[in-house]
Amino acid sequence: MTQIHMERFRPAEGALLDLRSLECVAAGPERLLGADLERAWPGGRSLVLDGLEPSGQWSANGPPGTLRPDGLGDTLSVSPGRAVLTDPAGRPFLLTVTERLEARWPTKARAAVSGALVLMPEIAEGSTPGGLSVARELLSAQIGFVRPEQLNSNLLVLARSINNGRDWALDEQRLWQPEHPAVQLLLQRMTAIEHAIWRAEPEGAVWDRQILGRNWVRYQTVAAAALQAVRFQLAARAMNTLERVRLLTELRRQLEKSVEVGATELMQLVGTAEEAGAYLPVHSDPEPR
Image (cartoon, rainbow, N blue to C red; front, side, top):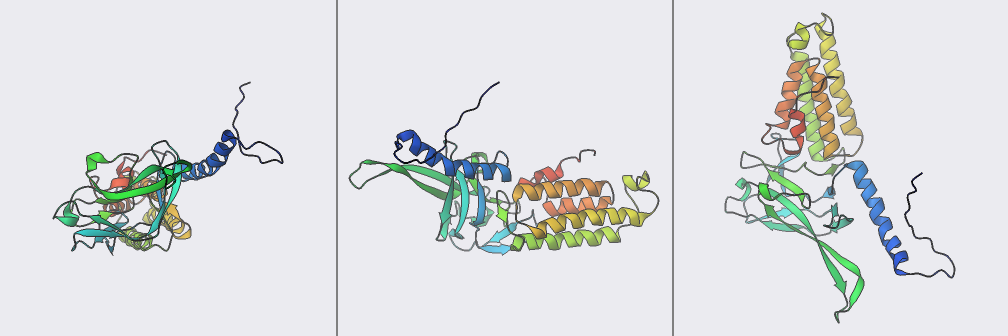
């Protein structure tokens, strides 16, 4: 039988507090934060918990969470907030930003530039004013724009440009509460899909094969029920981007099995494959179930 060994901090009267004991103290919060991140987003390295949003107006076009930034000035303002980041060594940490950040537009085109607004973690060794090494690090992050080909797992994407040259998609690596304006807007857009389902005429490959019988209202009811199930989850609890993508991907699969025009409306909601970003899986061919 293979045994697995690990160490954890356990204080005791008279016990020696050596370097390995201190390493156990330091590893505890990282393990907990890493486990939470892995549970919320398997394989993910970063996640915006709240805030860190560019100033602007939410748009009803483009993928969920699309914003039209204030592009009149030379800089883009980003709100305070919190995010889980992972340093190059693979250690997660919580970054809290208490003041608004400013990112200078990379070109005179301002919002029409192609690329992404990112937050990049930076780690520096701590020291005393006299230059002596201390047992702490300085955790910080730098905000700025990068070209699409420069994106990598060490960068936390705060916003990504949309092909129309005006809007930016924020829902890339974020946790949003149900009352967030972007989630409320998504719920409104799904209401429009529901209306399209109930207005739809009997048609589609599923109807032609009579998969659910010869009563069209039955098909509409199945489609509307799938839509309501997604709405309930979006309105009931905080979700991250990955969870929202999974929900809409499954919703498309269910709409393809009932009222196909609903699936078409959903695809228009997430935008084209070129601009869908994190929502690109919704465009994938539904798997049979």
